[in-house]
Length: 123
Length: 113
Image (cartoon, rainbow over all chains, first blue to last red; front, side, top):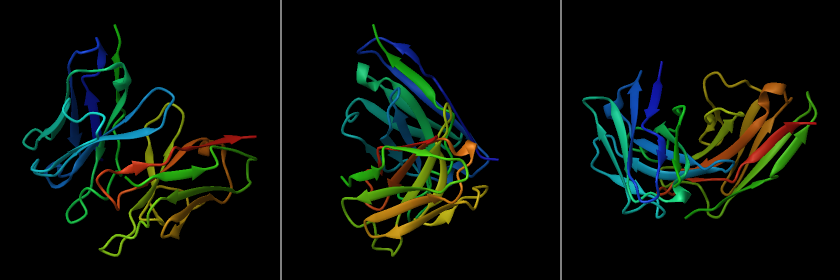
């Protein structure tokens, strides 16, 4: 059974930092691209970041570029999102999402989502 | 970026009646590999999104056959043949053809009349 379990969310002051983790199981983690998608309270889904299966390729939405860093440790089956210079508008539930495999690794997938972790940026 | 436009925003439906959600993209979603990377997701209240349909019309495992996806090019539709109480929630379309980025529609809220 595929499982994605996020952790690391919480309350942080504007300008602060937080690292989210996503522990994956039930599939060959190292073969799949992975994504982060967020959802502000009462709002729709916003694509945040993605990483290829070997970590060699990454993508960031303009809204987080230069502030967030996506990474993965395939030996630990874990995905990360390092967030810094946090702003009030980053407040959201952050979902870890399983991607696809080559050749359409980034285009497809999104077949499994974690339960999400809430990040609240407020003073 | 490709813009995904869903309609309607809200869809009140009588139990047992059909429902239809439209999704239009600002560009054709036909990829050079011949596939059309258009997915549909369901988000029930208080839950994470769940993929229902991938590549326009392929139902995910465990998805009831009352859900169906269709369309081509820039126009796509998710249909529920007979709405049940458990279908209440928000439905999103999403394109992957023109990654990066993946882009989502704004969502359609399905509720029971």
